[in-house]
Image (cartoon, rainbow, N blue to C red):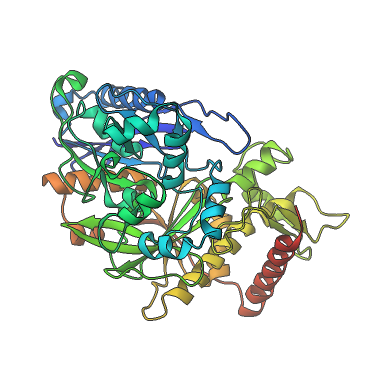
Length: 497
């Protein structure tokens, strides 16, 4: 029997998941690793932790499935995006901790570049906003702040990569220095229309292009693991950033199809086909996937706080003990109380992109309690999603968006939240039957490339939903609630911090 090993290297943990020839999960292993916060706003990982947890979860998953290395046909990799690693090309030793996508240390540099008028050029070429969220300024920071790094980079002794590139390099014992188009598109260094690293942006950020990896298709030949790792050489045949992998796992292959992944935050991607759409609403234009040299594009919106608002109820306010309690509490809430929570704990993401505003609660009364707070927290997830959908509709007026939103991620298991989401966007919401859509996307890429799994058409036909949520809220109530949300956001944006 054929087996595909999917490696899902995330922000707080690494997971390895083994799929059989029917794309069913037969084993999962997960290991968390330490987060490092050297200063306020700085977030780092030890690259050795990323590599060691990858190896350990791979081996543990094979043991759980009672499989030998020879039973693994291919490997697919999906990863946290935008996180930066720089390492010595001869020894493989990182020169600094990985700087994580959440890190804000280059905010001043981004502001300076913006003040000098560079954002329009960067946005036109990369589809991204000029923000420390992306990889380019993080890489520049390492070269400027690690002793000797810039000289070594200029000599060609250092390599740069996002997490996928680092894992591929380690797996292949330094033979392959590569990334896929979806990860390259998140670096703020890659021209997504022309399909190459932008010399103009690299000169602007003083980054030697020879540091950068080769950009491949999402399903492609990424070499083989060297024999000492698993005892045999296993092909690596699929790579995609985590949100794009989830889009693939949701089989959103047709223009207009859209998925939303609800975890700590939320990432919504809309397939826009073969033409990149320039956003007028401060959404990101990115590559959804690339096959045979042809990229398919997407509009992406990011919500900073989705499931994290429930964690706030549990860990900070302590009004719940388990996240699942919010469903029952929301059903008990007094509907006459119009409580609104704007969960801008770290600012607001798309379409606002305001990192300075902070959270607020509106409409409190003396009788407001845990049920009303729980309901407002869950509603905030739906309201923020509608913000993204309306921005996407504004940007993509020439084509129709699918009336159905496909959802996945931990928060998608909350039935009350998904029903409200359906109500507030006035559209069906389909929850995937396989919840591990990110790993499934990586597995399908590798399996399809090596000839084990079927192509897009059959894969799409096999996609199934576990549950569908349909809107029942009347139009007047829907628009009243959304208007109150928009007024609350406006008030939050106007409060000085």
